[in-house]
Image (cartoon, rainbow, N blue to C red; front, side, top):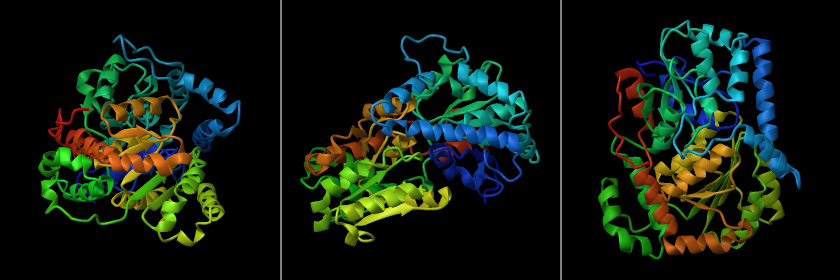
Length: 443
């Protein structure tokens, strides 16, 4: 356990907020992330507010699966949490209706019991959810308050009611969020460009030896015709040279990982993936990981589709389903799988920042306004490509591999993403660093 301690707090609502907190868990006095909406002794009133919000979030996320009206209903809700266009630059500090409603509940003592518990230790708070930061400020948390931002752009709901007077400090994953916070009225002194906290087990030491070794193997799989390496051999050699001697063969077969979000809204894409890639899977020249996370219904759906596709005999061989009862176990197993993943197929959630691990992303449709901006950010750094029709993945996926496009996307994510989020956050919180040193990346 780290000698430097801070409360590390997330909420159990989807995966994003806990995924961002997981790499910081070693800073917690308990060695674990504390869940603000489900802790031992939470007052029933507080629990009910959180629970209703979580149920509503899950319901809204799954609306898109309802034929005809689902998309329209979801879009109607999404307008309430929309992120306003960035240009022209202007004052966007006026609080939103969503933010006012949140503060109304906090002023009625929502979260006070939780903050009283945190005040039993005089250590900083690092949270990945905005309402926890607001609770801490309103209920007189006695140490510093840091808010980790989890998307490539954010709505007004992420910033305090009166940002000019607020003492909350914001830890931004990319430059666009830094600039957005300024439009919302946050003083520059309270904004820190740290990068998203990536799992350190996927990085290695400060020289990123684990990441570079994994990426070198990945590029061999993603560039079988050597089209990318013939053109960019010097780039690969320059940035991956500490990974050791170049390898003549990759460490693993070509591996695709498909991950659904916490609401399980896009699980049906897996059916098309399985049927489209069936011949490749039967030949054994492709491995497929299906990520059910902690959702048993998604796990059972994956099992059913594998059987219906006639691929049950491959389960546990070159088809694997990741399912865990606890989210901490899921994150640990998922991070381990990523080391031998060549292509990550998922919606543009907080996982867009995992492009920094040298992972090319195939982007499923966005779910929510923030994911539209995540998609734009990922395409801007050339680390992600929008999915084509999943029914024809057996054609376009391998066209992208043979062309070297995915190898190029892998290197782009590595070069322009940010890998040092955890160490940068630690420097800001404990060492008083104003501008983290490892901020040479473009985005």
